[in-house]
Length: 220
Image (cartoon, one colour):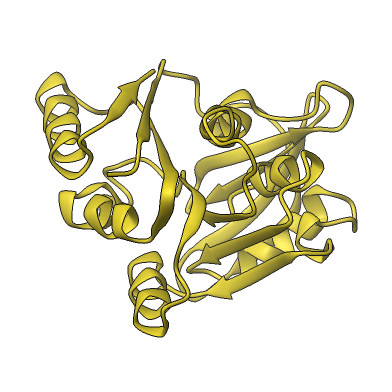
């Protein structure tokens, strides 16, 4: 079975609590999408909840958005194909392209998030780079579709859609099993969740679900 990684990051303050200037807003189909500029950063929020940010000056990337891709890549010698579940602020896609992964696919439920990423990256969105493909779809449907077509086989799948209490279906044993079945031989799945507004019982439940889906895993 494919190896896997599970991130449990420390709690962090929500970016929406900081003062800032609104530079993008859209009442989209699935969420209110906004970008705020503050303290040298451009931050994405969905329905007021922070989803990631980009520093205007180096170091640019939000740490967990990089680690969710960097750690699984460290376990694969020559990754050819990656899937990012949840576009967020675009930082994970940016990182994967910069380290030279030839094919990076992104599955995102809300298309307006791509417009927000264009603003965050000041017109130089990583979605426009060679080898990057955006799929507007539910991640579960996308993986089932790729498997039905026989075109799954991802070397890396990263999943950082939102907190578990916002995107619960992406943190279930069923989804983890679907992700495992969509990996190539030796592929790695990595997910993240913030220990924010989640009690210890819920954390244990998430870990049990992950352990049931993956026979080999690491917790960070």
